[in-house]
Image 1: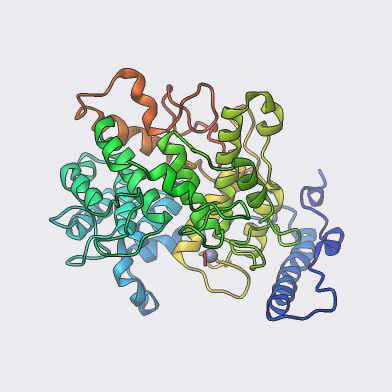
Image 2 (image 1 turned 30 degrees about the horizontal axis):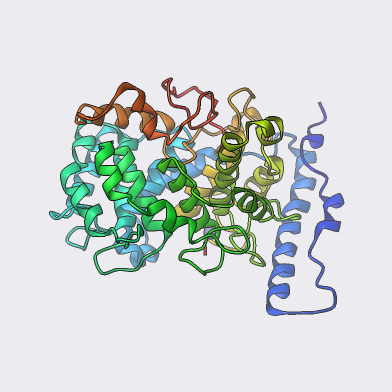
Length: 446
Ligand SMILES: [Zn+2]
């Protein structure tokens, strides 16, 4: 087999480069500079692939080493993230899952102890021991504890105090503050609803906690079609993912214009680079491989639910999965371990988590299709849950664990974890238990 045919012909792609039409701006200069860095990566690969036809390869062992060293010790460069420590834990745990790597039980046990120290007596988790509780580290801590998945980890999610915390940051208009007296944006809704779903709050609690939330999120859709952090703000990939994932879990998209959201999202994939940008006229960035990459199949699913007649049209992934995987594999890997935003940037744990998550989404797109893997089969990563971005099995298990607390739960309410009101969907499936080998989970800043 001529392996080179597996990779797009980068010389053909040159016509897709940005045309500044004789008007040079700061934005166009940066775009052209970025394309030059990327074309150097593409050209290098075209030469190297003649020497090693197994390229491009995922540097799995090197990335695992990067994760193993980070979970033990971080350089002083991470000092500025002292109030985001559960985030670092989550990025590392989720990236390790995607690479099919397990940490030792003793280490996972120590991580649970650490996250318990971050838990506030008033509910929710803080960015570090003794700090104020905040919705973002609460999301990261709950996700981390779900990934660890031991009884001790589940017990570290204190449902009554978590509920009080979510209540304390809920606004009458349906929005959520990131912390008491803190800022409001769409992230808050997403962090709150995912924590509530994973902890399997009762329907009654959910109705009270998320009163008016659908309408508030819908009010953040911009004229472009994407979702901004607040009403009237610019559409942004991170907020768009948070908004649409939250609406999916709430089981309603209200008056959101799904088709304009889909149009905005698919147009954020860069024609030459293959990765996604976060906003119109911004540069490509590896982390949007997930934020935009996961948004597209979620929106497709929601459109399909509303308009089953579009079946076939909405049934195939509407972004270029090959281009996305090539961008991450060729341009975002440091050969010594760790993944990055774009060539020239240093690797970090955030981009390692979200570039790999984006690859996962693009590989595991459809229940009825084989994984779509660019390069050797060894490049396949594990499936991720497109809405929570944790292992699908972890989401299932924690849901089962907390189900016993709910007296108002009927058997058919199993589907509340997925926010699913239809049958036979790809990734937000309600009935059957996903397994580690299940390849059916479609789907997969700045
Ligand atoms: Zn980024």
